[in-house]
Image (cartoon, rainbow over all chains, first blue to last red):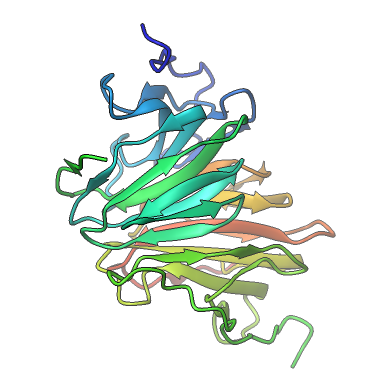
Length: 153
Length: 153
């Protein structure tokens, strides 16, 4: 495992389902990596050179919901970054912790807690964490979406 | 205007569009009511007896995006509450500020910053703020959705 790979952890034990209809409450567990009870932490993608130090938690959209969207939480460790890529589907990003940077076309924008970013179709984009603290954000996408196309940086 | 009605405000002046493709960065403006630059604050619904003290900001989904979802932020003032209702579409709620309560079927659950709630189809639900500080949360929904059906409390 190189310095960029991060082990995934299994789901926590607390059952999250609280009603017969299937509604759920996932308790937030702040920590070195933020997690939610009942939500497993996954690797962002299989290890590769073009991304580094990214963990993912899927809060909604992969547990039998009928939603046309998925709500994911990504956390980028210090020095980490996502893939530089583009695709037809859109991203809505909301920062939960730390300070990071988002590239939109050729320009980097610093973003901090609470800032919201809309990434338009086909925009070349990337997120990175040049700081020393974790950078965490929600990223909401259509459930049905095209595959990202990586871009040479 | 009774004590439950809250004035809406117009959009802030800072342009949020940052690329030719239409990508946007909305800066978070924490305050008595949390807002985002470039996002107007709206009333939750027309004033009525069955909800109180709720403001809404639509962060994505009403500005020409192609997303199949909308990302809204609701803030409930001290003592306020949303409509007790049900509908076929699902909610994903993530708490941004304060402490509040969510009713799922017949049970109230306390929720605090970071907690995530999935409201299943047809679940009778309501959110309320019994505390003294604002209670704010993101609520993500399908763009195409059925009309809520109010329930006698």
